Image (cartoon, rainbow, N blue to C red; front, side):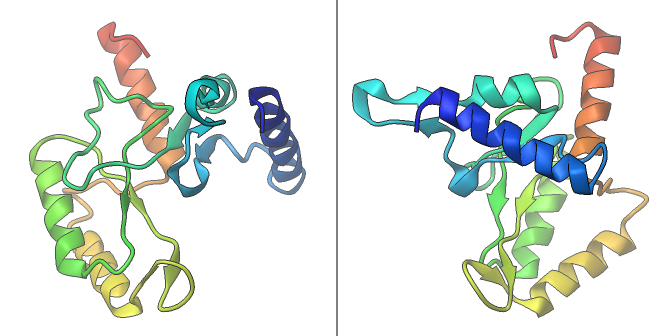
Length: 160
C-alpha cells in the first residue's frame, strides 16, 4: 500500500464508523502495531497521516516503558499487549506507571480464546483492582485522556 491508499482506507473507515456512531472514531489503533508501509528504502511512516485525522493513536511499546503526559507522541502512544499476561503483572505495571506519574495503555486482543488472549480470570481480577482504586487510578477511554493531555499541554505552553 502507498501512503495515499492508507489515507483513503482510513478515511473510508472513518466515514463508516461515523455513520453508525456519530462523533465516533476519534482515536486510532495501528493494526498489529504497524506504523509504516513499504519495505527497505521505500518504507514510509503513516503516523503523519494518522496525526492529520485523529486526536490520538495507540502503537506498540516496550514492556515497562509508559507514556509521559508532557512528552509522549499522542499519535504513536506506547501500549502493552496484555496477551497471556497475569493480572498480577497488569497490576504491577499499573502501580509503577501511577507512581511515575505516567500513562499506561494496555492492548487486549481477546478473552480466553482467539488470537493473543488474556484469561477471563486475569482480566476480571485486574478490573476488580482498578475498581477498588478508582479514586487513585484514572481509568478512561483513550480519547478522554488524550483530550485532557492536550488541554493541559496547551495550558502549560507545552507543544501538542
